[in-house]
Length: 302
Ligand code: C5P
Image (cartoon, rainbow, N blue to C red; front, side, top):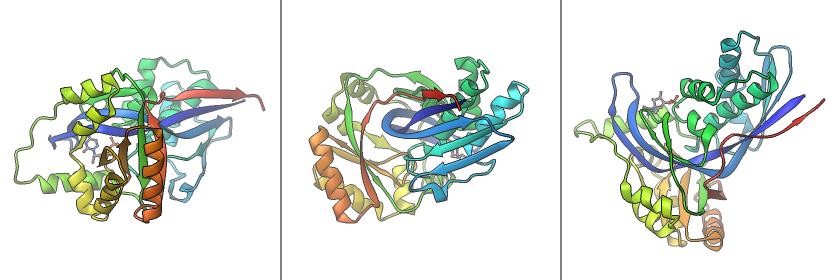
């Protein structure tokens, strides 16, 4: 038997970052929106743990125990006192090291796939607990939709979304390391008192109303100056999308993917075309949000 799970990418519509904590993490007010770019993880019985990956960026995906999918399988197996015997095949469509939680998606997907394959019967609470151990963004990959993440982003409160938002994502050449972007945030803010991160009420309101113009006016990402400092060329990409009619443009999470909120599907197609033909990005992808979290697509018998 094999089990296939589909998991969405995310964009942060607000990423408010506090000062570095003693454990090195940063407290956040992180408003996640899941968007319809997906990785698929297929779990098949095997002797030992094996990871394979296909997709345009597959060469950049580690296939060893550092892959979050492998760590997810190991953690679930340990908790249930069984061997982590599974072949996990990742069909990767989410940009790698792009600020869209592609690695986190694979962790959440592998967890759900192994739970189903091994008939572990883990509760939702246990799965969320393992997700939080795997990484700050992994719990959101499991739940999808829209949510406010506090703490280091792992404590989630689901948010109401009153409509569909049309996005374009400009995929950059090469990734950015999340720890490097947070370190640059610390460097840029060395001399200032970083305020406590708080969710923006107008932003939560715009999401609840499904109003793209209102949301565009309040999108914010405190990691953007750090990402632009490490990758100055992203400024040109942001300008290109705005000029092509995007309502707003921002760096997605820690980048280097840039995100463009548009009025509707037609506008998204125009912005994607303009970004692609400008040569300021590797590819431009259209996607809508919110999207559902990790979902079992199917089980097949050998
Ligand atoms: O939790 P995750 O493993 O995804 O975090 C990767 C890195 O990002 C951390 O090691 C840390 O440098 C940074 N980070 C942070 N504060 C957060 C989330 C991540 O400093 N809230």
